Length: 278
Image (cartoon, helix red, strand yellow):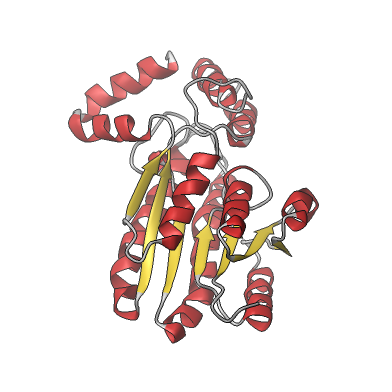
């Protein structure tokens, strides 16, 4: 490997946005480490030249071993893409706090730990880019997604603080805010929602929201974008000498966030209820 070859680490690389991003960074000339718990699902990435790592972002030993392995092999991490995450849906009344903690553990603390371990290496080189994959759901809320949205709001806040903290070291911090993306994420979130709030006081609302979430995972889903739009935006941010602080991409992200800024709270609540048919 050339000493000038940049090194990227992408978490959640076993499918969807993470897999597409890892492949595009590899095509752009990066040495790419694709990390995920389900190593068996990354065969195509390995065949394309991506270096595969087993990684559980909630396991500190696993995270430390992964970073140490990259530094031993490649000596640097130029781009960290914190993409690992999932959506845990259900009413605040129904979701067990153990599940709420698990949601925050993956989406927030996993991101924070990996960032903590990579930053010293970036500071030593006085360069690097941390790209945190948030969501338009980090700026607006939908019903029955309270804990998921709380985790993404936290990602937004941590990223803003980190951007100001690391500027002095030549490190860029970027937030990517996907809109509706055609991946398995929606189907998984819908199933969790039905298990959690599919019976009882919130059943009718859960049925309507789950149907919308599941629809986004269908191969023929309308009003969604392919994961490639996010992968392209991440490569653009990684390549930029001075990237934008936020990239809002994918179906609905721009209009939805514009409406959130424009409308009073109750008017936006009404618009969201209409969108979900509740």
